Image 1 (tube, rainbow, N blue to C red):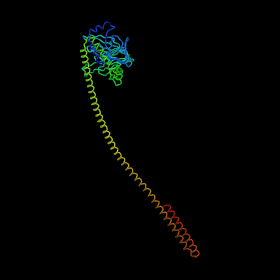
Image 2: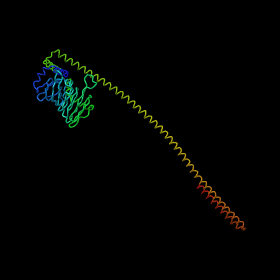
Image 3: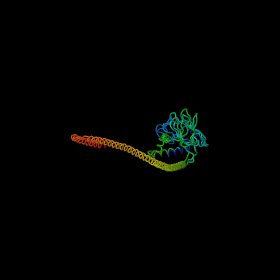
Image 4: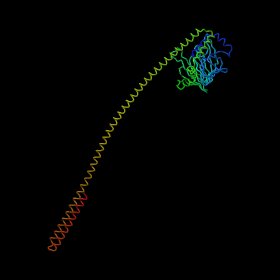
Length: 416
């Protein structure tokens, strides 16, 4: 509500040329705008600022830690100064009749958010912000800059080409003596460092956006804080009404202006909510479509893997069959070798038996011949004594033969 009421003041200042003439008594006392909202401690060289205070040309506005302020300029431009910031209004020229003019502000440190007004609408190149590393040229849009040690980051907030608020597309020209970069896509940013040309335009990341929003956090909390009492808000409204009355407006006119601005603000909010809802739906649809695609891809991959495994198993079974065949052939070959070895073993055994039989026959023949010879000798001796001796010798020979035969049989048994 503070923002809406403070915006009304800017509109009234534009229409009331007589008041501007009264304020422009000297260059030092040239009116630039009014403090619409404030949080924490915000000062100039001579005073501490409060909501509703007037801002003059060449005043240095300093916001401390956890502080911030919103200044409504006479051409309806809005300058929001974040925490730990120092901003100076160097040039402000404005003709309410033709909307011609020029705005030049310089940011020494901290953060500044700019929403351009009537001067930029008439001539987009008429609003510039000077930073230590170069200049920022606003072309009818909303942007934010953060000035830190040796570096300046600039973010184009909007509006974009397809905005639903009926606002024309804007841009920011980030430049210095070494080059320039045009930001013409919403939520794109560029950085500048000392002694170098500006970097290329890049889409802002979530962490970078948090950094930009953090600089304006104090002021946003002050506006939306539920702890703020209704009495304070009423006092603010009374002060604003007094100032409007002093400008020559009646109660009915003030009420109608406030209502119109409130209605416009509501319409804008509704349009923004619709746009956000549509974007969310589109994102959800895309996410679902991507999930389906991923599932199909995964299913295809699984099918391919299964097919490959089947082929591999078939190849493996074929290989196993081939191996089995080879093993069978090897077993047959080993069996044949074994049979050959057995045959080789049997042959020498048969030969040995044959040799043994031959030796036995030879021995028998030799023994028989000896016996025959002995018989012949016996026949030649006719005497009885000789016969007795021969008989004894025969008995002895028989005994010896029997013993020899027994021994031979035992040897054979042992050999077998």
